[in-house]
Image (cartoon, one colour):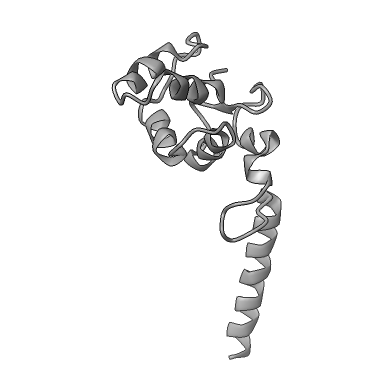
Length: 122
């Protein structure tokens, strides 16, 4: 019994340390830092511009946070689409191929512009 309590305590400490290291501030997944430019570039390329995330390497939740911060409606859906059409060529800095694929879903030009505005291809 004592061994189980000790193991549980160690697991709790490790999980807490992991959350702190990742910058998580709540279990709900929403925080002011998630929508900040610094948080939006977390996990993306080192050469990414401030407030932008890598279209090729960022996790879906990072892309979703960046899209949400940019005011894109239904950011989860569009983050999924960004990931679906990976990889993007390094020389496609304007993400023309992604733009062409997004047009198929008819989100409107303003929405596409907002989506592209938060992405980078290093």
